[in-house]
Image (cartoon, rainbow, N blue to C red):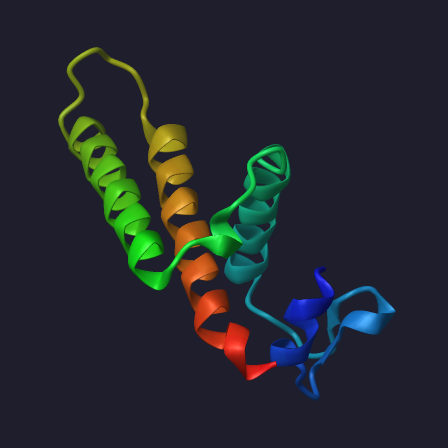
Length: 112
């Protein structure tokens, strides 16, 4: 966890100094989704620069990622090649979520 993120995440129910665990239960669906988000982020650690983007630039990326999600949704609902697209649909949903998380982070960046 980046030190800059700790400050705006400080809450009574989260302790990042002790490994970043939540001290209160979270929904299993949220935990599973967050772990998938983290897997994608770690796979893409070689990419840099999102934290230098403006909110406008990130919003544009979210729109682009959402368009990719829409395309996968259409292919999922009307398969043309017999391929099960659940994994692709989930991957695009995670991409949208990660860019939304970046945007959320940047809105807090000045609060440190």
